[in-house]
Every structure is written in C-alpha cells, then in structure tokens.
Image (cartoon, rainbow, N blue to C red; front, top):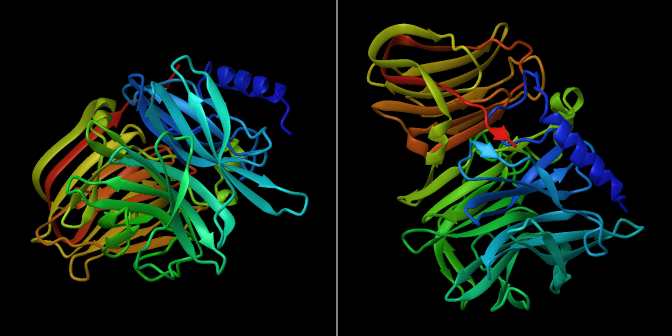
Length: 485
C-alpha cells in the first residue's frame, strides 16, 4: 500500500519543479508531459465547468509501468494549464495494483469517471473491477467503489478500459477484453443511471481473429450517423506497410445496431503510421470529435534516454479533430492550437529550386509545406541535428512514404513505411517539439508521430529532390511554450 505522505512529497516536487527553468534539450514545450515519472494513456477526456479536463495514466514515483494513478491537468485554451496533480490513487481493495484507463461523462453537474481497478493476488493472478468516481467543481474526487464486479463468463481477467457513450437516453459502456481462447473482443453493458449496469453481450464484428487483446475502445458517433469504433488491438502480425509497431491503434467505420449488438463495418485502418502513438481517446466538444493519444508504446520505456537522464518518459499527443470523409477519418490539429503561434519566420510562395534549407531559431515549430509534384518523383525532407538526422522520403511512382530515424545516435531508431496517394501536390503540416514530431499528410488522411532525442540542440531542415523542386507554399512559425500554473 502506498503511504499517504508520499503524495505530499509528490505535490511538493511538482511545485518546486515549476518554480525553475527546465534546461533539458528534450523537454517538450507544447506537448503535455510530466515533470517526472511515466505517462501513458489519456483518460476521462471531458469539457466540464468551462474547461477541458485531461486525465492520464501516471506513475509519479518512477519510469516503469506500475503504480498507475490518474493525473489531471485542466485548460481553457490549450496554452495555460493547471499544474499536474494526482486524482485517482491505487490505494483501495478494488484498485490496489493500479487505477487503469477509463473515460469521463458529465451528468448531474458532476464529472463521472469510469476506470478499471486492477488487483493481483500473491500468485500474481489478476482480478478486474470496473469502478466509478465523481469529480466536482471544487476539485474533490470521490470514489464510489465497484459498479461491475469481475468479467462475464467466457472471458479472462484482461477486462478493462470502459468507454461510456449515450444513445436514446441510455448509457452504454464498451469494455476491452479477451476471450478464454485468447481472442481480442469488446463487450457492452447498459445503464439508465450510470450506477447499475447490465451485461448486454459481445459486440459482433467481422474481426473474429484480430489479435489477442483489444485495449482502450471508443465508440464515436460521426456526422453521417455511422460510428467509428476506435481501439488498440494487440497481437497483430506486422506487414511491410502496416502494423509495424509492437501494438496498433486504429478504427473501423460502420453502422451500429445496439439491439443486435452488430457493427457492419469496413476494414481496419491505423490512425498513425509513425513510431509512438497508442491508446487514443475521443471526446466531443462543439460537435467536433477531438482525439488525444499517448505518445509512447507499451513495453518500450527502456529505449528512451529521457528515462534515465531526465527522470521522465513519454507524453500526450496534440489534440486532433477527427472528420469522416469517404469512409476515412481525417485528422487535423485542433483550431485552438493556432494560438501557440508566436511569430512567423518564413513565408514562401511558388519557388523553384534544386534544394532548400531552413535554419530555424528553435525546435518549437509549426510548418506548412506544399510541393508541386508535376516536376518531382522523389522528394526528401531531412530534419538535421549536426551529424544526426531523421529522413522523410516520398516516391510519387510507388506512392510510398518512408520515415527513417536510424541516423540518430540515441535510441529509439527504426524505419516506418506506408502508402500515401499524391498526384499533383504533396502536402505536409508539421509540428516540431523538442523530442516529438507530429506530421499530417494530404490534409490529414495520414499522420505520423515520432519521438527523437538529438545530442545537439541545433536544427536545420533540408528539402530536396532529384529534379527541380517547386515549393508552392511554405510557412514557418515559432511556437510558444504552454504554461502550467
């Protein structure tokens, strides 16, 4: 059991951290990360009491996957945030080995938090409990113990990550699980009051053998009345152009029938083709579906040098708006992030050149780049840090995009390949932070998230092609740091 005085120590460490400047060259300026410890899944994302509430998995004691708490930051504008604080603590009989992931629902003027309590016995056998807590306007979090005790028959205790949505004034909870024959699935419960839950059954899809566990499910209603079922399957075999991470996160889109528990859907598509993107969660704000994900990957924390040097590891992604077009979820940065723009370093239009190099004044940048492909078949962008670099290459003939970070001296390394259709123009929307790069392609039909740890703080960006390069548009902004107070 964790002693209560340790939380006083954590609060004191947080207060002391924000009184001084963090000079690490890897400290991110506009991605949410903690002063110390390990961060993973975003949880309980909600708009409540005039603010965005961003909860997340947090181990405030070390950089390992244990002691899972819920942390919280709040913001009105995604520039000014409250200081991080511990909200849910794994100190009760039903969650003593971890307050695992879940969601938030506003009802009766309170923010209701659903999460999985993880319990292990002396033989390391797992028990899972679906729990509810309430968070009020005074910042008081109250646990209300267990609302679903154990898993249904036919499923293992890998039973977690409740996501609640409402349809026809009935609440539904979709929960990730594993069958006794080790197949990933989700099951559904319903409720009229968020307190008493009835088991309805397993969601029927055509993915009958698609990994051994489905984590962090979301059921998101789209403008066309269809649903996007977003989840993170584990145990998918990798291919050349997809499923290249140890675990995946993606979606299917279809028609949901809650009477028959049937989802008639199209094929599975990954949300992010980069290296570090997992456990996304979606919430609704002003009729937009906004997604935040974990910038990290399970079982990989030892690869990241910030773990040992800075005493922290992983972060949360920028908020992305999801919009369905022709059966695909396009992703674009949340509009509020434009307030991060500090000054414009560069604005180019209709430039023809063999190679173009940018020497920005910082590594906190937003860049929009539009290349005319009528002249080019092979394009490369290099993010250089003196003798290190990350390469982004696109071949128009093969329609293959490659990200290569094997030329970075510190791990993590690797290559990712994916298909990207581009005929007349190639569009990038790039956000560079001190250890995270997020890139949106062709107005958001694809996205990639990349962590990197350069030994040198200097950055130059080279854009080049084998033929003449025609830059239709290039805009570059310095971005502000987000504030915690």
